[in-house]
Amino acid sequence: MKPSIHIASLALLAVTGGCGGGGASQDGTAPNSSNGAVITEQAATAKAANGYHAASALYGAGVEGAGIVEKSTGATRGLSLVDLSLAGLEALAARQGVGAATKTVTSETVACASGGSFSLTIDDADDSGDPSTGDSVVFRYDMCREDGSTLDGGMTMTNLVMTGDSGTPARSFGATIVFDALRSTYGSSDSWIDGGFSMQASMQTRPSVILEATVIGDSLQAVTNGIVDRMSDFSSSIRIDRSAGRYSYLVAATLDSEGLALSTPRAFSGVIGVFPSDGALRVVDSTNASATLVAQSSTSVRIDFDGNGDGRVDSSQVRTWSEVAADRR
Image 1 (cartoon, rainbow, N blue to C red):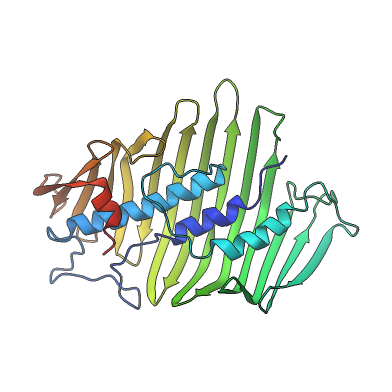
Image 2: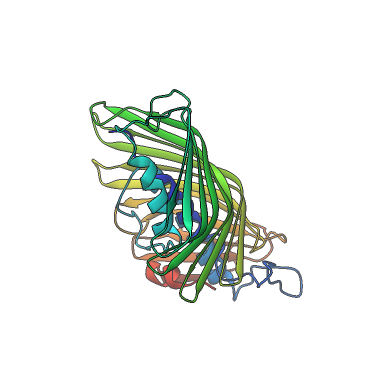
């Protein structure tokens, strides 16, 4: 079986779950203190937590890209756009092994259960009739309503790379994925996303099961119930050792809606299923004030505040990972 294409939607949507954190205003501008600093001693923990949410989202994108079903950190991401996007992407994945009567370029429009429609256009580069390397796919939703949700807008997948199958010791998946003003509403929740990224993921099964993935993007913007989150120049690199039951990851990004630069000076790592037990994450504002989140164990973290960028810790606070995961200010 070829790698399932539905992982791409999960990856994208994982990133939208935490592009910045709740600190941005309604227009996406970052709140500042009187001297222009975003990170103050009082705000250090909250800003570090917002950075962790963005890092966790980028990590989650790579995990989904590598085909991992379980999340490898303790925090579960909320993916408001997943369900309807999966419906469309699984329609493509379902074509594998079936072939098409008309190949090269095919287009299909399907009525959604409660109104509106969904269309799928596939450029089948090798005329195989199945999703394969070189193909491209365009999804369009026209007020598609199902299960109480409404989806409107588009998504494109290009530069598709799919190698290997269940009978080979190595396999890979890659794509450039772009959202085009994709909007989802469900009850009182209203989410919108624009932008995208490129993803590469691979898996080896011998001598041990290793999954690796990278996610790289220039710009991604999400609006959830009027709150704007913007991320630019972002990347993540992850490694999952399924045989050893461990993971590690590095991330970098500019959190435009927060006015912060995010990096991991030491890779986060830990046991699959729990928070990182080692590693460090740093957020820095335009005045070089910083907050560094240091994993002390899989249950506790230390947040170091440096108010002037001189490399000296001005104050520290110890928090549990659960507190950090719940802090979205």
